[in-house]
Image (cartoon, rainbow, N blue to C red; front, side, top):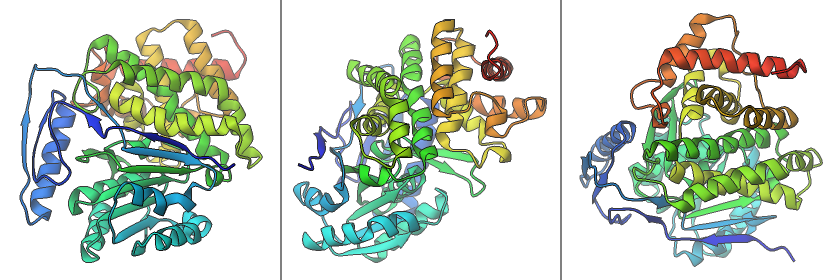
Length: 432
């Protein structure tokens, strides 16, 4: 009776024909930050590979709708035991490099080792270095090249998955994402968020294709710290609001094209699922129990948010997150915790209806997401810190510029202060 949720899709729908075996490909983008990332990828590929990559970047008004996704998504209790079977069904090749940290290894290594061995895959386990940096991606790539690997598998959280995907750019491997936390929407995307060693934001990198397989074992998600699931709620909560702003501005999504109706609808479904099931899912993790509510929220955090942010687009909430990473005091807080405060800032700056803001405040308070600067380590009286956050959030090419009106450091700084005040009053039970 242990059934897995399985979704299979086309790898992507976009204006260019792009084969993962090709060494000659073209992207047509209008976003400066995407253009910068893709130029960077081309430089990396040409410097690391024997075969040069010819990447042509053009800024075009020929706008097409673009939607992308993993080839297959599998979720359920004890899904790790099926990894070899699912890889074989997809025709994935070995040798395989499995990247993980100590906790996923302790909980799941015996299962993935048996599953891969039973289906004839030669594999090597590699320990993740801790932060998704350019150097870490290089290290994983070099190990994969040494072993002549054809597939990279990532077991862990968002930074491990991003580092493995970034490594796949360099070693031309297929990727299997196996999140052991429902803490971010990273597993399903082709976007790699790169950091410096001090955890401050560095750059975005884009892989040439999405993960071939995303496999989520909810039995291990259920025993992870509640804070990890709550962080995922914060990341996913912003998906609908950012997608809506991108639609209002008729801006491009993260794949360099216009939104599809599918991408926008998935964003809204993600939001509805979180509001309906989020608190119950957190209670399930407290009880270390796999429940229908937890299954639905894991799918929302991982699949719906992953497809929604990438095909819907990002806006102010994630830009404020990037700004917050400029503050050392924020390094101990999760991606989703920072995004949640960024969302509140976005709603204030956009002048959204009070009822909508109240709904977000209530949800965040109920599940334990931050709604004040103090809760993410920032002193609300530190004008210099707030200005630094706002300047980083509005840097040229940042996602804050995807919305329907002009943003700058001044109005973002004001919105940060107003959001902090709004959250403080909410905690005090005063009228907002």
